[in-house]
Image (cartoon, rainbow, N blue to C red; front, side, top):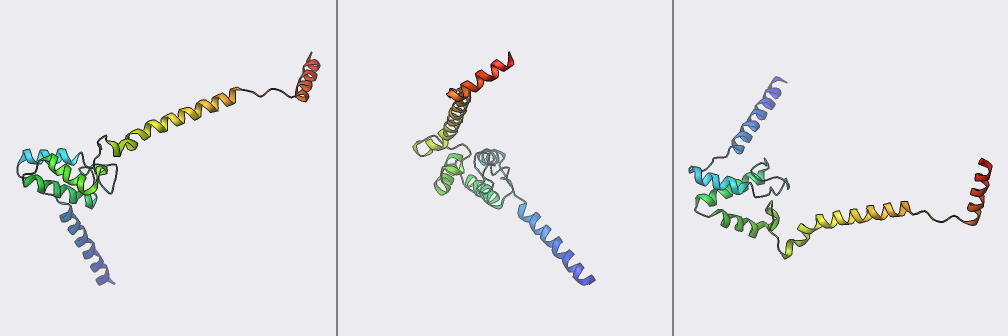
Length: 151
């Protein structure tokens, strides 16, 4: 029993040690190049987290993209070339701020259309609540009867 517990303990320690080594990322030697890489990492969306930049994400794919960006910047690519490479590979969706162009009009315009539709529905609802239907002859007679009783 003690041997099994010891084996589990050692396995857990090894797994944590492997994870710590895998997460360790080495920044670029040149601080200017590292600053360029970091600035670009803030503009690229994590493909797994979806609403986080790869700089802020702990996902494996984000780590791989950070390494790719550092590698390409170290090889002399400009941040624009690296961004272009990523867009060619993953599409405009990889950018946290996709460009406005014909293929992204729906993406940029959809929030405005949703707000307009909600406003339209709220106005119609308000109008339908404020306009009362006229009373029928039976309802009118009943109302008159109740009013005469009150007096």
